[in-house]
Amino acid sequence: MRVILVGFGVVGQSLAKLLLSRSADLYSQHGIKPRIVACVDNKGSAVAPAGLDLERLLKAKAKGGVGLYEKSERFEPQQVIENVEAEVVIECTPTDLLTGEPGTSHIISAMRTGKNVISINKGPLALAFPSLIELANYNGVMFRFSGTVGGGTPILEFAKRCLKGDRIVSFQGILNGTTNYILSKMEEGLTYESALADAKEKGYAEAKPELDTDGYDAAAKLVIMANWVMGMKVTMKDVARTGISGVSVADVKKAQSRGNAIKLIAACDSRRLEVKPTEVSKKDPICVNGTLNAVTFSSEHSGSQTIIGRGAGGMETASAVLRDLIEIRDTIFER
Ligand code: HSE
Image (cartoon, rainbow, N blue to C red; front, side, top):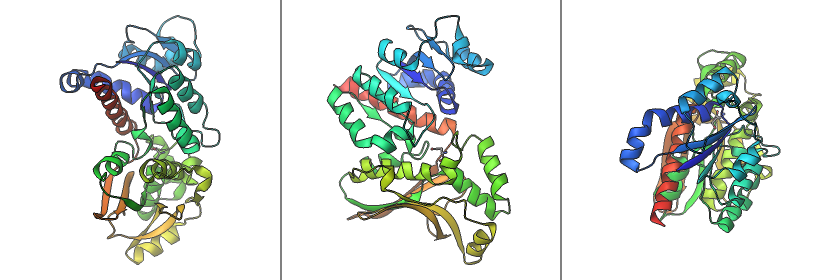
């Protein structure tokens, strides 16, 4: 399967490492042999129709950018997406929740040229979910985005597939790993600033960490879930959003003394989409710590179920991309 990788940051590089370490079992267990035929980062491009040598690609990136892979002409992402032959485009450029760019243009070009798309970029989905789904259907391509919610934890699949026969009436949970890490560390006595610095260093935070701390990232994931799981047609502007910058260590300690914790809770029901710091009982299964995410779905017939797992991290999110790749391969194979 020929793959174009657009964006080569933490997740893109983790994916390359995962492909290197898992190549044998990906083939033996899933019959999949992904070939990265092009990779573009913010400084250059590397193209090889026979497949890029991923070790060499990672070394080039460590030295300054994928453009150092070999001496060749520099291509812009759009040129690569439109002209290089491939079955799948993986969109891993940084999330921009104001414009959705450059991710949205990349996804549109890929779909228009008949390529299946995997996005871990939340911007395009948070701002234009309904139209991107329509465009994918119109062009007869698959559009997958497991890694946009929950890192490697299959929150979207759990709701969409495992609860298929039921009707989910509402859900709520922790959708942002960075803020959960900060709030958990504040409980342990760290200041807001040092906990945030720690989260940035560990690679959990967005390129612009205000996206995490001001609740935009959780709101984007809430929008993706509301569209995909609840069938709503909503975007970022439909979410009432409050971040965690107003939460003090004193607030955290006060909640703690009551057997509770302050969590950035994202909630959706038929009336509202909301992200805000909320006091939650420590006995509630969604009250998880560190970078864990947790979502409780309330269904009409089967009651409440909670899914918990790591919500951020390069390898975790890369594993979600691999899941999407396998699913695309299986669907192509079945057709
Ligand atoms: N910055 C995000 C988080 C990364 O902390 O949850 C995963 O989407």
